[in-house]
Image 1 (cartoon, rainbow, N blue to C red):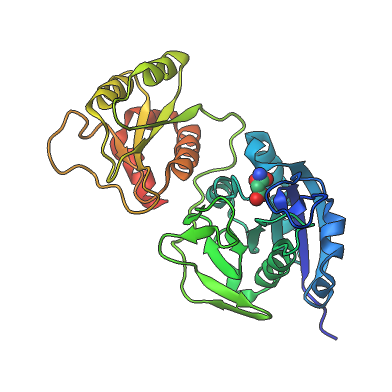
Image 2: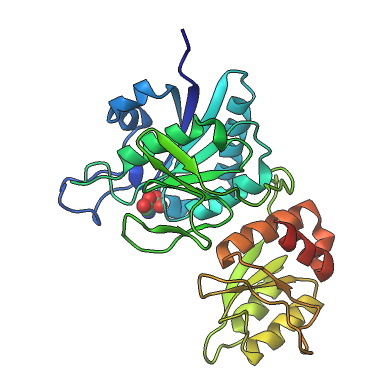
Length: 330
Ligand code: ASP
């Protein structure tokens, strides 16, 4: 008799594990309180899809995510994916910073089995909780042979997204997660379909033991240089700019950032618009060849990549051409 695939669920908290005394409210609740055993028990249909094992890796609101928790999660992914009969791994997570954790795991794991992250916009006690179906769908995707070799995947709202591309784009809607070029595929009951293949997963290096300090600053009307100067003074290794439009930076901020780059800080231009590719300047400007384009990565994903790149090779901070190549490759 064919055995069901063995899937490991690693739980970290979030709204999917949230609870409220008022089922009619989906905005007021306590995140990260329900244990993974109860989340699984709420979805009896899981038993007909996979043999599930679960581990409570953490119980946090993902707004409080840390590098230490990323390292712990990566270590559990490595542990379980090395077991010969584990077919896939599902990670439950809060939605607030899911896109960052997904990016960090995506860039550091050359995982032999599918790693699928899921979450929920509504707490488990809500009248229309989305967590149970998202969890079932994530397990369905993790158990599906087509999910292999596509890097870390994110499943919510019956859609499959690539870790590199997905971002939370709404405060409360169930369809809060979007990918710039659309989802990779869909899940509808036991029908799992990938419509396209994501960019080749690229493992930049292992999860670092010590992370370089990389912060985000933004360009807007009448900015000052106080924040950039203070960050450089504090010894940051890199700065990501949430620039306006196609990576435009106010001249006052740009001046401060050029000084930062001269001082050896890597400067990456991303866009605050939420979509689109940031052009590498074609016209001469004082920042040409000094700032790096984040391509189509949002500032939060660009920060993860920049920190990982600088952890792997600190000399990249003074080598914008090679750093640009890293952004082009990711
Ligand atoms: N604050 C929650 C979290 O990120 C929100 C959610 O999961 O939807 O953990």
